[in-house]
Length: 354
Image (cartoon, rainbow, N blue to C red; front, side, top):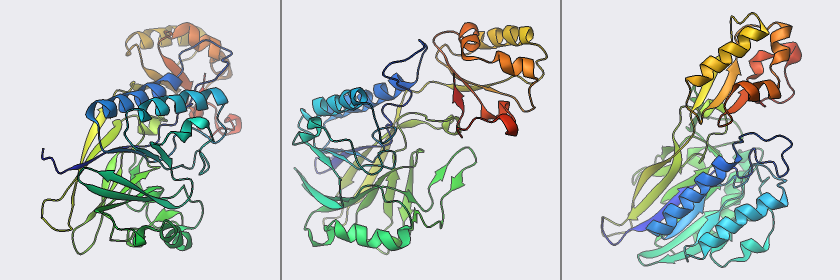
């Protein structure tokens, strides 16, 4: 590795506070600590490797209204990392409704938030980096995107490297087990609408890590999604989670820069479906689940599923207390929405946690 690289660590979609009740009514293993632990792993890696900057692509928190305890826990981690002297930039995402909760923790001089369309300059030993960015934009991007990018003021700034930071879906990005591809919807950024003068786009919002290409005459521009740092649903159960280390290199001796991205995988707990089709009695259900759980990873995240409609006695047995009695305390267990049938489906679209 040469000495003239500008080094960036890119992460996104940490969703801090997910499944982390401040006052839990029931003692069981929750997923909330998994999200905090992986965020800390990223910060620890950055503290060891000392990149020129860290960029968070948005959805720092799991929702807009976050309990003060979660806000303080999260920002304290960020503040302690900022003490290393490494600049950290954050794009507010859709989960924050485009606005991070205010706090004195964010007042550290090394923490920078794209609270409005703006451009930050980070001076490195190998050149100045202009980072243009803006909070998540809702609605029709076909008319909004151009003015929002222009409002950052990036075009009037002189820098060796120019990067665009956002928390949006960009055409070509894929998600889910069926590889759904974002294409031409009004809330999807089209590649042609990204100014070609940027060296790269660093983005959050898409939970699968991937690198897209924005075609241009002088070489394709990389559009980099690090994905989420933890799995938020079973749609992501086969996806590795982690972050990118990005090197920007001047290999040609002119204004052209080469962008290299290396993915670093973070540890995640296995997600397993347990189907209960064919179970004809509550007693058999208990025996089956105990035997099935014995063969699973002790840290598994389990989803109970069934292709066919369950009989009422079995469905009624699937209470939170029953599942805690048959599964080890080290596992997290949830019920798939397909257990209920259309007439009894829970109001939440996602699976129900027990």
